[in-house]
Structure formats: C-alpha cells, structure tokens
Length: 588
Image (cartoon, rainbow, N blue to C red):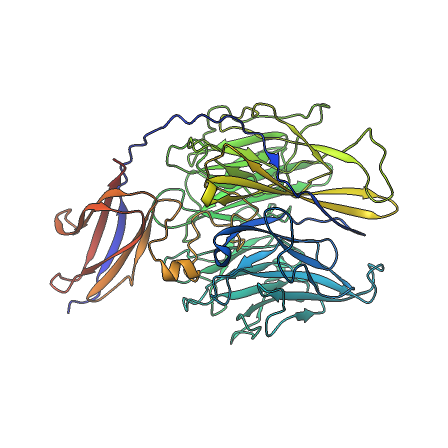
C-alpha cells in the first residue's frame, strides 16, 4: 500500500453540438380543460405557485400540487379533479399561504409527500391573534405523517430538504430567524443530535422561503448555504461551517440578500465544483443605491474577475444560472434597475442583452423573483419568463366574490426578443408568483402552472390556480423551470438528489448536465473513486497523469451511455504524490 496520494481533477471537455431544426407551430399556452380552480378568499397576499410532477404509482400520470390561501393543500389530476382524500384540510385557524410547497418522496414509497408551513391563529379573521407557526408533513394519502405537525412560537423562515449526511434518507432543515435557531429533523420529526444550532446575528430578519443546498467540497455530503447581511455561511451536518466559510463581504457598506434573495449554485467553469452566485447592495437613504453580483469558488474565495458592479441600480432577485443559447456554458440572468441582463462567466453580456421591457400601457417591467427558464421547442435555445409588478382593472364589473383584473404574461427568447403573440393576457396578478413548468414525458409536453390573485375590499385576496399546456413543446424542463430550481427548492442548477428513490433504484438516471465530481476520498491511500455525469451517450477517455505530465493509466476509453458513472483508480503500485485525472468526452 502506498502512502497518502492526491488526485486533482483536470477537465478537458470537447463537445460538438449538433443543431436540429425544430418547427414550433406555436409557443402560446392553452388552458387545460377543467381549469382554473378558485379557492376561498384570504385576508392577506398569497405567494405560492402550483408545482407539477409525475406520479409513478398512477402510471406516470401528472399531478398538480398547490396550497390554498387558507387551510387547504391540494393534489389534482391534470383535468383539475382532486385525488382521493384531497384536499388536505388541517383546521379552521391555519393559513397556508406565503411559501411554496416542498414535494419529496420522503419515505421512499415512490409517492410524493408534501411539506408546508402555515400560521395558526386563535381566530382566522384576526391576523394579530398569532399562536404558532406550524410545519406539516402530509402523506400521499392526505394524512399527516408521524411526528408532525411541529409547532413553534416564532415565525418559520426557510425550509430545505435533502440528504445532508449521506445516509440515503432526507433531513429537513428549518430556520427560525427571530429565535436565531436552525433546526434539523429526520422524517419522523425527531431533532437530529447536535441541533438546533444558533444562527448568526446577521441572519435575523431575513425570511426567505429556502436557502440553497449543495456539496461544495464534493465529499458526498451536502451543505446548507445561507446568506446573512454580512456573511455567507456553509453549514455542515455537524453544525459547523465548511473550511473557508463564512465568507465576509469585502466592502462593509454593502449587504448580502438586502432584498431577501438567497444565493444560487452552479458549476459555471466545468471544474466539477459548484460556484456560489450572490448579490449585495449598498444603500444610503436619499443618496445612492448601488449593487454588485459576486461569484465565489467552493473555497469561499471570490472568482476572478468578479464582482460585477452596477452603480445607481437595485437588483431585487438573485441571478439565475442557465444555458440559454445552447453553447454548453452557463450564463447568469438578472434584472438591474430597469434592464434585464444575461452575462457569461467573464461578465460579458450575451448578444441581444441588456434589454428594457414595457407593457402595452407603457409601464416598465420589473421582476422580483427567480427568472423561469425553459426550452419550449427543443431547439436548445431557452425561453425566459418572470413575474410582473402591475395589475390592471378589467372593464368588466366584478361580482361580490372576485374583482376582475388582469396582467400581461411576457415571454422572451434567448436573444432578448419578445416571443410572437406575447404578452398574453392573464386574469389577476402574479406578482412574486412566476409560472412553474413541469414535463409530461408520455406526451413529451410541457405544462405551465400559475397562481393569480385578485382583490376585493369585501372579500380580500382571491386566488385562481391555472394549468396550461404547450401543445407543440418537446421538453424536458431542464434549465430553471420553477422557483428555487426544483421540487426540493435547492437553488442548485447541478443538484443531484442521491436520496431519491429513482436514483437509488436506477443509478443510471439521466442527469441534465455534464458534470465531473471531485474524486473521493482525497487524499487517499490505495484507491479513489472518480464520479462523473453524462447527459448524452458519448465517447469517454479517462487518463491519469503524474506530476511530470506522463500518462500512467487509462481508466476508460470507449462509448458510454448517458447517466451517472464512476470509476475506481487503484494506486497501489504508484508512489505518494500528486496525480491528475483528465476526462475527455464529446458528442458524436
């Protein structure tokens, strides 16, 4: 057995992109028969878009998940009819509005469970009569799962669900910013040993619906990445920060997550490690409002040549990573002041950007949440959707239940041009509720779910849930199809859910992007495992080089199918030292 050896991943990616002409007859969504569905009015605004996922137990039928503005959670068929035992109703004094659902097969029975929090009052009609915040875990049959609900006397901030300790089971992270506590539960509602931990003081008052999750150091364990006002933290399962964290903002006159937006993760430079994308703002009342976009390495160091500076501009959402032009590289999209941008990793704007948009009444268009990015027609060029900040009174007089109003739904292509026939008239407002997309594989079709809100002084906020189909779409929705990216709300473009039933039972499940992961363990003694993901079948060559640049071993050389792959390098016969692994792959 040799002594400790180190292996550095060096990635060489050769990719020939073959473009196919795909005729898209229409990019106009059509309302699905049986929709919209209206829920009872509430006394407060509502920010929860419906989620779309496949139900494998029902033969991969599509299910739509959403929470009403009061005390109901719904699972519906594609035709709008509720599934058996749904909607779930908790009690008359809880309000479920205010955050999106987390959808997860937490008990590995191939059926989705729902995690949601709400507020319990002594009286529904008395907003000041707050008792508890309540976290519920609802089984697929509409019953509350053992160990839940969990009640707390202060407001719940963020919920994140992932496998944080590599035991193939999900853990639930819940923050209580006003109490400066971060909890970690198992799926039975038990608090994990060593938790809760104290949240740093600069996290107090920040109430995002989710932080971001990812394996920054590629050791097989996910971290929870949390932005406070002055620092970015990377909490490990033992409650400690990853080495190199917290990141401290370089200019203390700036603040992270000033608007409440949390960072995103993506492997922007193809080195296998995720980068952290974050914003900061500098504000002096009546004087200046400046913003910066930062990209940090997994070590916590700022990536060269970032940050990107925007004087006299406010960035209200965190930048979103996506490959909008199909060149194999990720860009990041955001709005700074009135302009929409997509820039590459070198901070250079893409062709056609930046852009400023107005609606038909001349109002500047603003976005306050994640950009939603999908490829509607399979041409490798993405379409972009956002929320919208205005709602207009309809000429039709409302009745006693609903106040008729409308908003324009915008669609933009990868060059910044508005899609033909857009904007589309949508009933009600969808401020902070951008559309969510889901993929129905049996038909190769994309569906879009929306929640829109209308208001009357007599009845408060009335919510309408709508489901649309794109009849000529080809899918899948593999860029940034929903808020926080995925059903677990990880805010991680490259997230791999190692606890998911389909991945545990089918390790060759197709990933959505090429990724090389750091070998593990590293350093190592006799052997190490090299893991990589292929979105398509490819010719793969893997070679090991010594410090002199000499090839000493070939681990793979041939055609490999799409999926998740690993190869073991046995280094028994080699001396201690630093070695390099080169992976070459390309489409053919």
